[in-house]
Image (cartoon, rainbow, N blue to C red; front, side, top):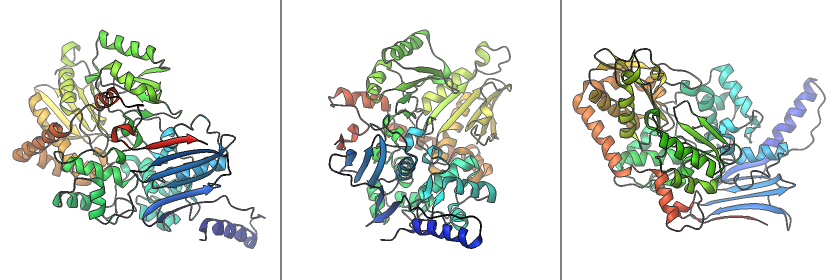
Length: 532
């Protein structure tokens, strides 16, 4: 087998010599390779065999078809081989090239190296965790910076355009998933996926085609979807979570969540921080708490020696620096609802004090916000969802940059949708005016179910609304009363079949006598991590 990357490096040296742009010498290449062997992803770099007695870390997941091995020397990576799940390959390769000390990460990095770099509340974003000089496309030697520069300087918005411009993703295709992530992380809500682009490199089918096949053929398992639809290999970190979401959304009563197809944060039900610890955020409905609840949180924080306690922008309390082995007992001691701060669910419903306390308030925003948050709790969406409810047009809850913004006015409520307060701020668009809180609830539920059914996995409400059009949404959830009622009914059918608090479920699993609380115990996947 001939690797292309060293040939390109040699060609660059030759080009410098021929054009007189400076003298360079070829000093050899540190190479990695990522390929598919009979449809299975394989990645290797450096000396991945190791010598007898070498410092070695292994992870074996027989059920999931995943094997990972890292060879270490003086706490630095000397070689990597990965089979079945190669998403973190570029990150390990970059650490190997940089001579990074990984001593503090050795107990967690095989679970997800990229997750260690994500301290936010959006789940694992491997692209954001990469440094600019990380090689994204090993076949053509294209770095993350090369791809980002092409996006920003040339105005590129699709993977095909990036491949045409940089050649990244144009050889083996193993880097197409990370290119999509770079697009999303660079463009934010400005990124609109092409109608014809496939979900990932594992299939030629796009999101709409996959959803249609799942529905018409009543496919209720991730592996069943891949078998029936002629998937290439075992799927990747892009398509498996999408398929899992579509199955649960379309067939809530006949499917079970496939936790092996969720990102690490959603499997752990907590946010992985850069030091390998976790962030735990309990649900505080509408941002309203009690002295007893605050005492409970403080007591738990002291008991588990939590180093940082922070008030979040969503009016909640974040416990940062929690050890993995402390997660289940901490949840049990807290005895509070899970805040879903780690996944594609309802994050928060931010409220102001409204007419109950504020002299300017025209409507009871606090009560409505709490009611909506309780009604929508435990729902999964294509991407994270945030609501804001303000008691008057002064808009102290910042409702007009939320996925759904609700503002109290004289005689009723103003509902606007499709906002986003991220890197690229998007203001909401007016959906309708209603008179009662009951109408607000029904329209909010119909809008979110419409988004659940029509949105593409990892697509926020703002780009979805831009893609399908506000007039189309208004016709479906405001004007057509029968359709609105049907949407709400389907949302409740999902909640009746699938809704449960994940923290409580994990606590119950731990109480049943599992030897050790790990992210794999609930699905009984054998995992072996050892040092030789």
